[in-house]
Amino acid sequence: GDSVTQMEGPVTLSEEAFLTINCTYTATGYPSLFWYVQYPGEGLQLLLKATKADDKGSNKGFEATYRKETTSFHLEKGSVQVSDSAVYFCALKVWGTGGFKTIFGAGTRLFVKA
Amino acid sequence: KAGVTQTPRYLIKTRGQQVTLSCSPISGHRSVSWYQQTPGQGLQFLFEYFSETQRNKGNFPGRFSGRQFSNSRSEMNVSTLELGDSALYLCASSLFPGGGETQYFGPGTRLLVL
Image (cartoon, rainbow over the protein chains, first blue to last red):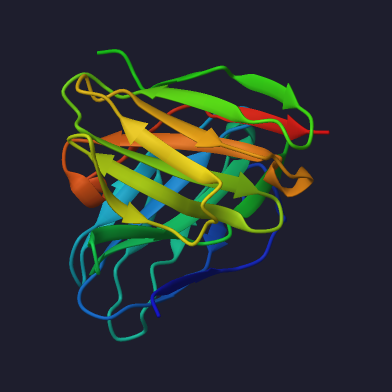
């Protein structure tokens, strides 16, 4: 079935370090891919998205490229800040019985130290 | 434009009771999806309503139900509460079913079952 696998956290980095959070997926058809971020005490916010192969989504210094050949959508940021501390969710949207459905990964918690 | 609102934000119930949670989507959005978030299971899809009709349903027991009103506001109900129902319940709205291009999440209702 359709699924999303994210690297387990927590990930702890120092400020200005490079961030990679791995995400791979399994899906029939051609899914759209998303990264959401959840700050403490809040709901999820869309961070970036890509709707077809080789698309790059970017926002707030974060980037992810839709790689169909490796079924991956890894999240990267060149220089993290303390304010980036949050939980990051990779997700895919795919057509299923009953219509489109969105499937989320388990989430990866990021801690950034000053 | 006001975001997705959920009420109440926090709730404490005891086993066997029932609970009703409310979600008001972004104005103009007709699709509302509900998710359960727990540390062990992550984000799990409960159901989706579009134009007052349930479009999609996740793998939850019949104790979990929902409905949507003509103004697109949605409620979810959990009857005969169990300890394992303690979770953060998130709703998300979108213009179209299946999350459309983007889902917008509310802050969630945190339910504690004692």
